[in-house]
Length: 440
Image (cartoon, rainbow, N blue to C red; front, side):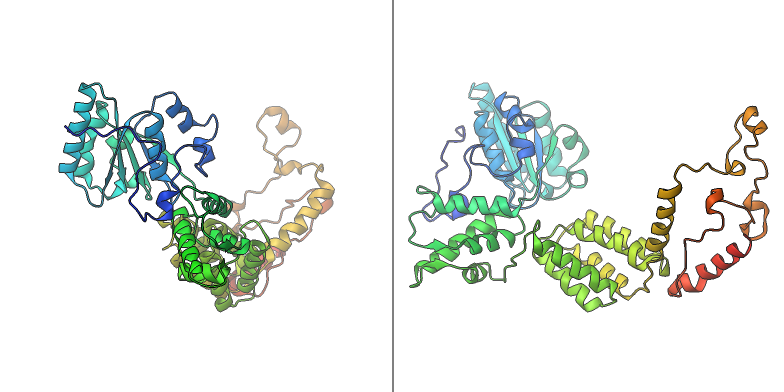
């Protein structure tokens, strides 16, 4: 009978195992990131410490520690850990593993945590095969996926599992992991006679899109390469060579973040699609949050394109939905399309100027009463006081335009909106505005 032992404190690795495998955290103290789940008093830590681990789906980007977290949870629960990959396993493997898990329970050897990596790769029949054993407690399932489980995991299995979303690691998290690996005498690179420059660590941390595995393997490659040279120092150039692409010194909380988005916005505002695409690509490749970029484009669609092309806002909000739905890396398609559209659209800032003009008067007259004819007369007393008296219902008039005061008395006749000559605004809204104001 196959009876896997509980996960040991130090997993045995073959000689020459990659740094990412050697530095795999063994407990929550070594685990970096996901504080919302495993920090002191947080839900996953509480569940593991109370030995009440449920079946669950860990959903998050690559390299965020899903497999490592599953191992730590199994170790804390003193359960056997049986990993399967949905890419290479099938129903026969599931039947074997669940039969062995049942035998373990009968023999009093404890529970089994069945870890299925990339569970979204299992088809419906394969997921159905797991369901009875999750339902009767034969195994505690921990599935890992980079895809939205709402779409990729069957409903019955999803309803019997808890979904925990892991967040992409921040550059500061990656830098901390890299420095730990450089200082670790037993599993890391502390015994290497190589110095790694701080700029190289920061550049590497900012260039891997939150993937700790890629960062550690690139660091190891750069250190090994430096050991064969005379300078024995890892620089930004060495990191670029290890990654096989240029790194981007881009701090998402610092000057580069604000400077680059500013350049992007001003390129779009200046109707330069080529520059807009360049700055967009710079941000995407540096690991900028794509929804941050899209939010700026939605704002830009109203602030700088505005009523010169009302479709700009529709395109920008559709981009937000598309990027949220498909994610990255394919999200660059709708983002680039939107950047080009906004760049080439006619520009008008009349929304901004007219609103700020109205706001100035609001600040000066915010306590002025609403004209009586614009108030709703919902009681007899209010009607007696003149509420609603003389109000003209716009639909009773040609063109839905009425000669009627709609502003407070002090502001009667004030004009805020000044349509430009640009695009749709110049062709349609200007004429409509002139007609409306001629009736006042």
